[in-house]
Length: 351
Image 1 (cartoon, rainbow, N blue to C red):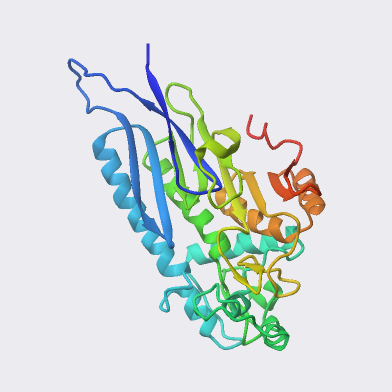
Image 2: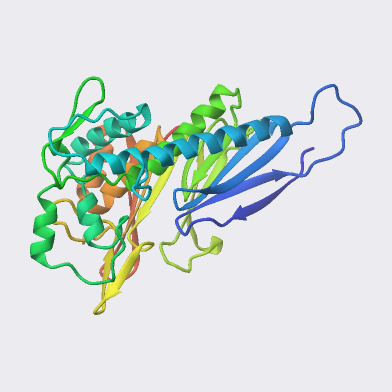
């Protein structure tokens, strides 16, 4: 009979990984290297990554770690706005009508960006780079001063993914000099999917990948136990004892976006890093947390951001009609208490 202990690794106020950790017993003899669960950890994209590998040898875990580091380094080099030499930074500096042919990683992120941009009516728009910088949330750090409306209007002239044309080969041409990409709302999800792809190529079926609280789970553990993810109360000091929901997932991504992690307060008003592409202002919808379940994390990551910009009813309707994802939204009701709203298949998705 297998014995297990339940532990919770705190990493993000939104999502927790609930681990069933096996108690290992000595084996008298074996012809193959011992296989067990390994946890790989490190830093990337300004946050942490954690990869749990089930039923692998120490040699496989070491090889996986090296491949993961290589993949993440490549993604950062291509897609980080904080690296002045990255592809996205170089694209942001080019003049209009100049053809820019990026890496396959950049191209794939843009393909998904266009799709989510269309799905959400522009609520997800990575061309907000200049506006994000203006508010002090981008790669240009400024003192916490509220930008004037004229500055916002000027920066908004370059906003709109329709101002960037992508041809069949994936080459990009922008039509406005102030159009700048900031892919922070999608790049974590892409990185998670890329790691999952590496593990599949290695023949490792059972794993969980977590970057900054966004997650993709592969096949369930060999004993059949599902990967468990806890969604906590959306408060800065919320801990594992404040879990509002626990999801069991397999071959699926879960991503959460909230307006309570990255923000500043000025004159008693909170200003979130989630910018509304329609106004150039921090989003003011009643949704302050969105958790998306989808087949890929790149899609879940982008959609979770869009759900904080869209009207709550529109978000729920889109999830129901698209069949590509399900969503859990948190807001505040009239009694100043948290209200939870889900699309119809949120709890059963993937079953």
